[in-house]
Length: 395
Image 1 (cartoon, one colour):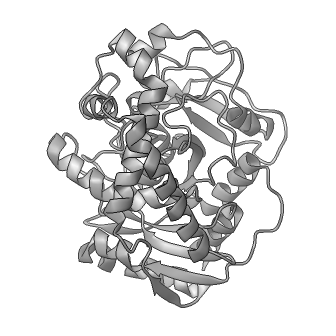
Image 2 (cartoon, one colour):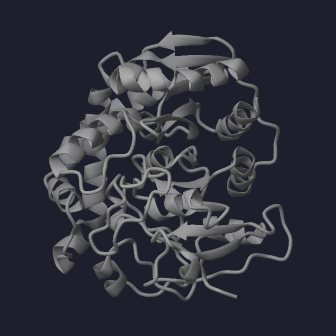
Image 3 (cartoon, helix red, strand yellow):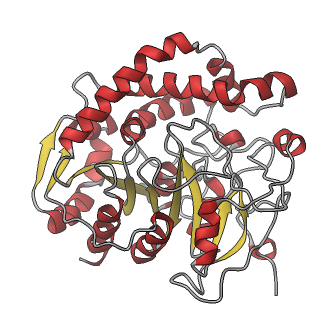
C-alpha cells in the first residue's frame, strides 16, 4: 500500500515528521482518513511545530494527543501529519523552511495558515477530513481561502493536551471537511456530544463586520445570506462592536502577544531560531509586550465576552464574512499581507476574544476563488452550528 507521501501532489504532508496511525476496527468514523496538523503529539514520535529548530530541540512524545486519540478510537485512519506555519504564528501558510502547500481551489494563491497543510489536503481530496488548530483564525481563514468547511469550537471543549501551544487562552482544536454531514460527524466525535442540537431562535447580521469587509465582499456573499435566511429566517442587523472591530483586534493582538512571549520567549531567546518572514517580526513585537500592558486588557476581554453573551443569548446565531476577501497571491509583499491580516483579524478576533464557536461555510466565490461566510453561536453552541451548516447545504 502506498504512503500518502507518494500521492501528495500539493505539498500538504510533512516528510520530516511522517507517521501513520491505524484507527480502530469499527466506530462512527470507520473507513474515513484524516491528516493531523504537525502540532499534535503521537507517542514515540517527534512533533515539528513548523520549525526545524523546534524539532531538533524537543524530545519524542510519550503519549498521543487526546484529540487524535478520539478520532482513531472512532475508527478513522490517520495517514500523516500536515504542514503548519512556523510555531503556528501566521495566517498565510507560507513556511520559509518547508514551503507552501498548494491551494487547488485558488491556484497561485496562499492556502492560509497556520493549518495550511490540513486545509490543502482536504481541498485536494487527499483525505476525508483533517485536524487543525485555531488561535486567531488558523482554521477559519484557510477554510475560506480553500473553499471547505472549517470549525473553531468553543474554547476548552476539545482537550489540547499534547498539542504545541501558541497562546493558551485563545488556542482551540479545529477541523476541516468538504462535506457538511461529515463535519458534523467528526465534530460529535471530537466534542463527545451525541445530544440533540439546540434549535436556533433568531439570526443576527453583523452589519459592522460586513461594512469592514467592504461592498465587493458583501455583494458576493448575498446568495449565501439568502441560503442561510431560507433556513433560519429573516436576519436582524446588529452592531457587534460599538467602538469598532479594529479596536477589538488591538485587544486580541496585545493579549495574544503577551501569551506568545510568556510561552515561547525563553526558547526563542536561548535557541535563536531563524524565524521566517512575518513570524520573525511578530515574535520580535511580542517580546516588547509587557505583562503590565496586557493586564488591563483582560478586563476589556471579559467585557467583550459579556457583550457577545448578551447578543447571542437564547440560541441566537450571528452571520458575518469569514474574511475581507479571497486568498492573497503567493509571495505578496509583507506590508500588503500585513494590511490584509489586520483587517482579517478584526473579523476573526470576535470568536477568539469571547471564546465562541464559529464555522466557515464555503458557499460563494469572488473572481473565481472561494469566499466563505461564517456563523457564530454562544458558548457550547457547537452542535447547533454544525447542524445548521448541514441544513444550509441541503436546502
